[in-house]
Each structure stands twice: as structure tokens, then as C-alpha cells.
Image (tube, rainbow, N blue to C red; front, side, top):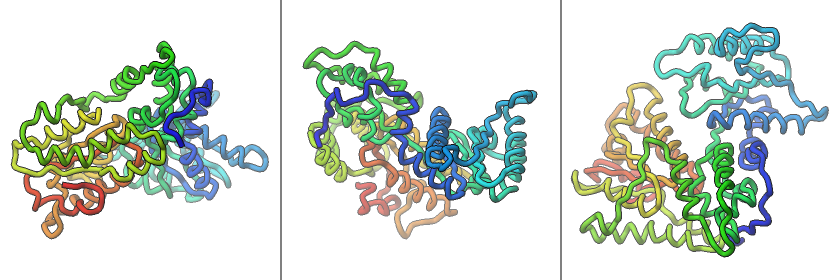
Length: 423
């Protein structure tokens, strides 16, 4: 299959609900099937996506029902019903939840669109969470569909109510040709649409956010015949998708870093040249084969002050990527589960700002070499979480991990040889 898509084959118009249905088709199917089996599902997705995912799931449930109606659905969203007095969203949600749980009958699905707002906590449980917990466990026959924005924390006891969890991040690359319109594609290139080039800058966006950005692209003047405006469009998309606390570096590997010829050569041969080759390939099969060869990370080791972090910034500059620098010791927390959540938060941010390079400075603070492990068990959990996050990337996503350490022996030899990090 060719890399580019003829513009005339793209849709003329795309509604947000259609974009969600097409981009999140596998997620919606997963949720629908579990709900039909009577399993409670916790969905982790951006807040702006939650309502659209619920509507897509509801439509699927109704289409698959013999009577065209599907199971009964009760929504707990904090909006007062007709004739009810408004007492605030949280109080109203608790009342609605109480009624739904205690009045739940067979084939009733209770939808908690704002479960995160109702029960979020960073230290001790809130009053609302204390009231919600016994309610959620009161009726074991109740089927729940809860939504949580990743920026909120949920108590473990509430997560335990749900039989399965589904995280929705980004959009699949193959969906772009279905959710980008002809007008928007012509604002990028006059002749063909290249989903592979566009995906580099939008892989971490949810379909609602993606449609908003592409609608803005569609307001641009169309490219002249035989011409391309891709560079300008991608530059604007890059600016729109970079959050405040990430950096767009400008460090040239040759001009700004002296010496280290062997390190530079290895970076070029094992990563940067492969990425440039990927951008020039014209076949989808060739691109996917090359993506399977790309390393997911690298470790720089050496004494302090030798430019390890600077090398990471030079890599990011060559990749047109953002840089997120996190301190290994600062990721660790005394609270159970918070260290792993800190890691998840870093990777969520990286995926939203992709292409991105995540730099773990002093990675040996939690990733020790085999045989040198000493600690409370937090470090072991953090390493497992790090590997889980790296294994969870789509092969087409441009997120790269860099670890830095002053002592190679005392740190991350455990990563090498399994395709995660190389030194």
C-alpha cells in the first residue's frame, strides 16, 4: 500500500461523533462487550472525550438489542432532574448514585461520567468519596461504566469496583484517512494526503481535540497546484500541541556539541538516520518494517558535566521533538502507588506532546542493576511501570526514552538486551 492517499478519497465532512466512532472503534467495542457480559468498566480518557465515548457505546448497545432499545441506562452526571432543586453538582451526583444503586434492576447500566470529580483525592479521602465508596459496593449486581480523566487520582478502593479498565490515548494512524476532510488535506498539500507525516504530530491527541485542530487547518488557504504547505501546517500543529511544561530544544548535534565522535556516529546510525529513512519511504509495509527496528530508548552514562542531557536535547532537535526532563529521585513518593502514577503522568504528557523525548535524569535512583537492589519495593514497582509504559506505545508513535546515570554498573544493565534501552 502506498504511503499517500488520493485527496478525492477522503470524506467531504466529518462530525465529531463520527470521528470518535472511527478512531475509537476498538475501544468502544471492548467496552460494549464487557458491559453486555455484566462487567463494570472504568474508562480512562480525556474529559472532553468522555461524553462522546459514552454516546458511541450507548448507540452500539441499542443497535445490538433485539428490541432496538438495549439495556436500561442511568446517567449520574450531577444535573438536577426536572422538578428537582439544585444542591450543587457533587451533592446531586451522590443523590443520583444512591437512587441508581438501590433501585438498580436487571440489565441496568449506571454511567458515572464524572467519577473522577466525585471521588478524586491526593491524600485523605474527601467527604464525597467516603459516601460513594459504600454505595458502589452496596449492590454487587450493578453494572457500572465510570470515566476518569488521567489528571485525576482515584482511591484504589474505588478502582477495585471495576472488573476491567480501558485507557484511551491518541488515535490509530490508519484512522486519519477517515477523519481528515478533503478541504483540510488540501490546506496541507495540493495533490496527496500523507497520513504518516501528519501522524507524527497528532498521534497523542484524542479525536475530539484532533478535529478541532484540523478544522483550524481547514481555514487556511488551499495549497497551490503542485505545491505543499506541510512544513507551515506541521509547525503550527507542533506549537498547538506543546504544553507549557515541556521544552522545544534547539541544540545541533554537530555545531553545539564538541568531541564524542563515536557517540555521535552511533546516534546517527542507530536512530537518526533510520528516522530520516522512514520519512522518505513510500510504502506502508516498508515503514512498518523499519519501525520495528527502531530502538525505544537509550542510556547515556558518564561522570557529571559530560553533556548527557545536552545530547538528549540534540537528539530531540534532530527529531523535531519536545523534551521532558524528569529527575529520577523526585519521581519517588512515600505514598503507595504514587510513584507509579508519577511515571504514568510523565508518559501521558509525552504522548500528548509527541514527537517527544523523555529524559530520566539519574535513572539509577529507581532502576538498579541486577544483584545491587536494595530498597522498599517501590523501585521494583517503578521499573515494572516504566517497562509497561514503553511496551504500551504503538509502533507508530514517536516517543523516545533517554536515561542518564553517572554509574553504569550501579544502574540499568537490566534494561539492555530486551529492546527497551541500549547504551
